[in-house]
Length: 312
Image (cartoon, rainbow, N blue to C red; front, side, top):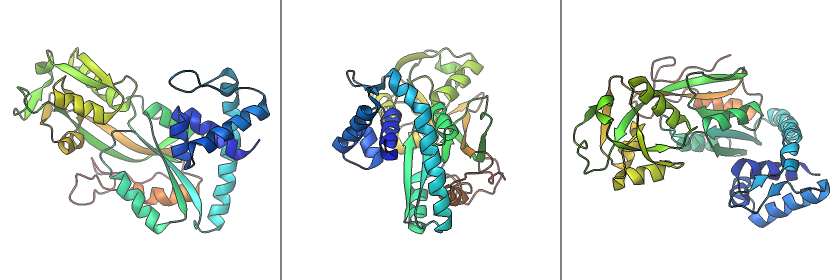
């Protein structure tokens, strides 16, 4: 059994398909499939059920997960130690993010980091907040941008920086509210909504806002991709509540919402008190002080709407 095989196994488990896993591991799909098949042959059991539209783990596969995570975490710890001595000429940093991140231009920040540390490989995973938290806790992610619910972060996970995102109502260009500029929650009782599937950070924030205001939304369609949500709103199937930058970048009418003014908190988090991975610590030094992309001047640490300094 090779560490590479366990990494490929976990990649398929995480991404739900061999195609997506191969893309994440930067290898061709046939090579990844062969690697997993060889692992199954060595263990004498099938690890995935490949008969459905989505690849799902078998009972044997689920039983392998804890041991695979432990082995890979140990491997990463060893790699981190070597990278520290090597002065970050090599290494790997694993970053997770919610799909609807708008307060930080993550692509630009990672590109800047890559120019400074070209030998460090960056692995980026997009998932829901619960999945990202689990990835951080399991040692599969060094840092993650999360949109936690009211319960906050679990023990062992700390927020290194915090931002606030304004949520707005977006409509189709020809919608009766399109030119209103602002609206009240109570005026949306008869509107059909397009929303994210339950469990995503944005859906949780919008549902909490609606519940607080006593709004019973009629969900016409729920989706898993922000691009599809925007396309459906543009086509007139319903309205939606999204971060302002998403609506503005899509060119849709954006209405400010009053009573109350909505928003959500986004945090850059990792394992407490700080990442053990030297490459992750170096990246954190950049990301923890990134200003909100909507600000014209860098946001002071601790200022409302701007990032907080890293803890510890």
